[in-house]
Length: 210
Figure 1 (tube, rainbow, N blue to C red):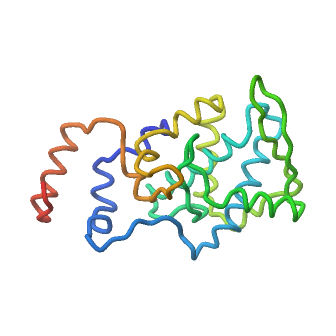
Figure 2: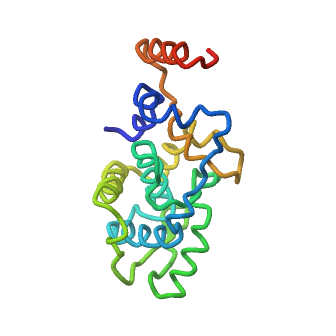
């Protein structure tokens, strides 16, 4: 299934999450602090970088977008992200809020080495893993989600990947603001007649404003 289709505001949203999402007292979810986001972000970075070793198209843009799509799609399907980290709106798409801090600490710890290479008119960041990621902190379904995103984004250029992330989910926040995980339920695709009818029935049943 294409990544763009993962973010449809459709019947699955109504069935699986609406009871939790529509309460007026609900607050936006920006991170899952109980998951120890920095540790999980570090290990997920190592996993992704290792999977792209030798890939000349891989740099900071693809890394950020693989992290973002993996976390938000997993949240869409499971109500919780993989890393638990917060994402902010950057000019070139969503990025983990603390990724620079985490990457610097990884370099200091010897987990990863960084570099720069010329790619056309631009400089591309290089990431060289110095150890294996600790896969034990992730479930098999989480690894499967990461692999699915890697597979979908692998043939795309960094520009394509950046454009793909500039959908409605990215536009809900202002520059440098955090993006709520609930934005995963927004879609750029028009609703089908069935979805519209189903939504009206739910509005009538639960007394929501139409």
